[in-house]
Length: 523
Image: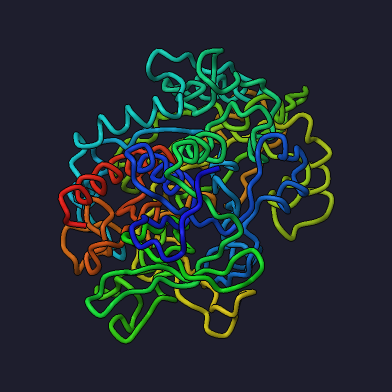
C-alpha cells in the first residue's frame, strides 16, 4: 500500500477512478516521483477473489448504481437501469474486459476528413496526428504484454475460434487470427500464462489478463507515491475564484463526506460517470457544469455498433472453453462507402455462459423457439460485432434531477438512439456473421440485439477548438487548466477497434505532459 497523504495536502494529483486510464496514469505519475491520491468508488478484488460464476460475479464487480435511460435503443427497454456493463472496483472495467488490444487505423483519427459530412452526425477530427501515437501504442503494448506485438506469440485457438476461422475463410475472408490480446501467451513476464479456463469477463483467476488492479495500481503503490482510497465515491470537484480546481469532495466507505485538496484533478470515471461528475460540479462560475462553457459535456456518447450472432451446429462446440474473445476478423474494418455506410467494423469471437445467454439472447422472449435454442447451448458458437458508431450531439449524458443515488446526488440519464449509419453497419455485420455460420452448415443462426454497453466513449471529447469539445489533445480541459479527463470519455470518435489500448496509450502520453508542465511550473 502506498503511504497515505493528508487531506490538506494540496500538492497531490487527485485521480478519480483506477481503470485503464486512471490506474495507468496513477502509476506513470508515481514512477516519476509525483504524489498521487486515487479515489475509487468500488472495493478491491484480486484474482483469488474473482468468482467464476456469472451472476455472483456480476453482483461482485458490476456498477449497479441506479441510472436511467432514454432514446430508441433497445437497451432502454430491456435494461432501463443498466445502460452499461462496467465494473465498480479497483481496476475498473479492466477486470471485466476480454483483453482485445487494437490500434486505431490512421483514417479513424481523422473521421470528418475521411468520411465527409454525414447528415445527423457530429463528426470531428481528433486533434492528434496518428504518428504522435506510434511510440505510445508500442509502450502500451509492452506494458500490457499484448500478443502478436513485440515478438509475443498469439494465443491458441479455442473450438469457438476454430469454427469462427473456418466460417470466415469459407466466405472469402482472410484477415482472421486469435488477435492482439493483453493476455499472457507465454511463460515470460511477471504475469502467469493464460490457462484457457474461460470466464474472462468474471475476472482472470490466473492474473494472465492485464488489469490495472494487479499491475499498475500495486506498482504505483510500491513507489510510496500513490495512495488508493477504495469505496470513495466522488461527489463534486471544487475550484477557487480564478476557476482553477482546488480539490474534490467524496463520500468515504462510511458515507462521511470528505474533502481532499489537490494541485491537479484527473477524471477517469468512464463515459457516464465522468460527465455526470462535471455536471454535478456546477457552480456560480460554471452554471452549466464544470469545464462546460462549450455545452459539450455529456454530448456525443458512443458505445460502438454492436450485436451478436450465434450459430447452432449438429456437434458440440463448447464455446465457453478457452479465452472468451480471442478471435478476430478484420476484413470489414475498412472505410468503403460502397457497402452503404461510412467507417468499418470487426467481428470477434464471443462466448457467454448459460445465465447471460438466457438474459441477453433475446431479452423478454420465451417459448419453444427460445428454449430450444438454449437447449442447444453446448453446440453453439458465437461472435460479437464491434463497429464505429457515429457521434451525435443528442446522444448524451444528462442529470436526472428526479432520481437520486445513495448519496443524494442526481443520477446520470443515458440517452441514445442509433444513427442510420449505425443501423446499416449492424445489418451488414449481421449478414456477414450469419453467412460465416451458414457456410459451415449451422442448423440455426441467431442474430441477437446489443447488450448493455461495455465500450463507452465520448461525452468529454477532445477538440482543437474550445467550442467544439471539452478537452485539448492532452485531455486538458479547455476551461480549467489543472483539470484533465483521462478515460474513454475524451474520445473524439470511436473507431472500429476496442478502446482500451488507446485509453492506456493516451494515459501514458498524458502523464508525460502533466509531469513536464508541473516541472516547468505551468501546472
